[in-house]
Image (tube, rainbow, N blue to C red; front, side, top):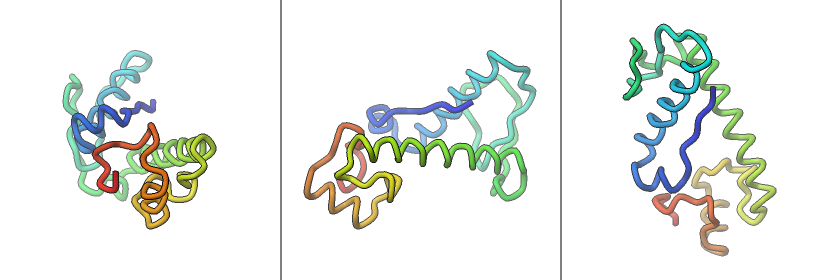
Amino acid sequence: MIAEVGPEEIDQIGIYQASLEAMRRAVASLARTTEVGHLLVDARTVPGVDLPQTSIIKGDKKDASIAAASIVAKVHRDTQMEMLGRRYPAYGFERHNGYGTAEHVAALERFGPCPIHRRSFAPV
């Protein structure tokens, strides 16, 4: 299950808390459709879930299920960036995936932020 937190909410609670909230939402959605007995989490504990969980430092290198979840998340993010690149072609999202590269910063300076930019993103 994939869950997201939008730019406005990230601005309100911060990127770290937003990532935990996305995980909580994903677990909540998954728990409605399957029997979930235990969570394995990469270096974190997901708040607000009533399941036992194990935080594994560098879990993506030590556990195949955590590694797979990391890959699914990256592919999902990259696909979103490709779609946003088509919607907002001036910013080059499909090339830098939202990272603060020189190209991204230059586009922000030239065009200003678009609706999907987090206002808490330092170059904005």
